[in-house]
Image 1 (spheres, rainbow over the protein chains, first blue to last red):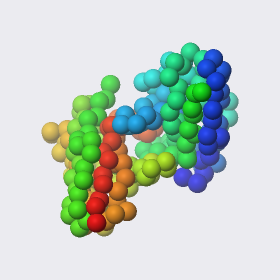
Image 2 (image 1 turned 45 degrees about the vertical axis):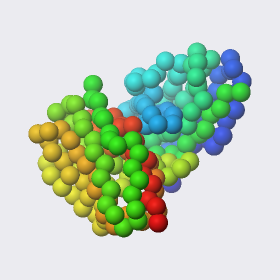
Image 3 (image 1 turned 90 degrees about the vertical axis):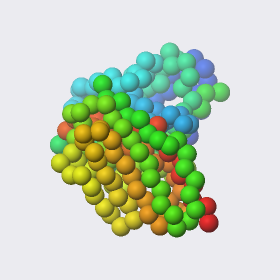
Length: 112
Length: 112
């Protein structure tokens, strides 16, 4: 898990602003994932990507966007269309044909 | 899609006693079932997992059992210690790429 980094650790956003959360991995993993975590609600999948230049919507994709231009990077943009973005965001990755997901340390986003 | 239910949502045990958390899944094609432990403010970390061709797996004080017919699996922690206090998540996957559906989590509190 030390091979996955997320930045920043804490992020504050004003209403109406877009913000981008960074996720980088040096594990040579093929698949990457973004989750949102709210108290008492577990981990909900926002977007995932299994190969470069391709990504799929998860269960709660509305108000978010992603890109996967490089294998090691999977940034998440929280747009102004996301009405309640305050949450803990976790990035994860996994190699091809192996199920274990390795998580980054997370970014806590707060809307002011 | 897959739906995973987890019970109980909170579990309080005396140090030295056992703790059991149960999860049910809906998709009979699910073939991988991991359990993650998340301490407050930290990333989830895999503690044990089981695949559909195995009925039980143990690792020191932790064990997981799987009943494919009933579509449920359980985490057993024996001789609980204060450092076992955390939130535990179960998950299920039908996807060889590792896409997981998580349960809502169980807050375990071990009291001395």
